[in-house]
Image (tube, one colour):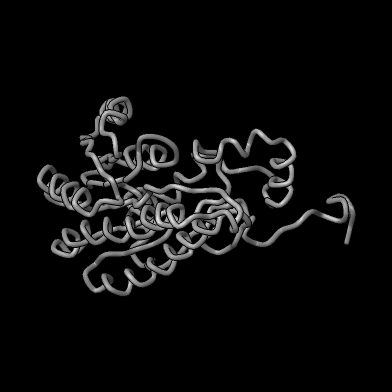
Length: 265
């Protein structure tokens, strides 16, 4: 069975790898055997992580990428293909968020989040899919969120972008399936990252969150390792257009228990 999860000899692009979950995704793919292309708006931010992956025996290339700039996307794709020839895996991870009550969201806030998370993901996928279609093989993994299927106050632009990612994933799966390219959405639940760490400083909020998660804890970054490797590998060859929630069960709609778990129903 191990060959179903072996990525040896494959090349993966992971966008947004200067920090956060992007680094965990790239590290998991590297452990499975993949060579990596890392991206960030500031290439110098990738130096330490690039050295870490090279220390694992992987070929690694760091490239500058601003997903809000179409020219930057095209340059990244051209440089990646020039360096490696064939791209097997794309993880569309680069993203941002603006937390505000809906009445306070500005035009600029909306454009920042949607242009980064949704438009950027589409045009990165388009640029890399050209190479995948040419070679008749590809695994595209769009990073969504539990907000791809649920709404939360104060996250209007973000939930719109992540809901859009889910729908975009299904559309691209239909577009590119005939060429051997699968497109899926990996949707993490509540994970502590640099983007949301301020929330986890609120003890009451954390207790409220944990109470709604059936597994009774927020996600740890390594909880996503198996899912990202599965979607990137041969083991998911007949899976496309799907959203895989890795959220501890919070999307079940769990609420505070009214009876003790020790009590019989």
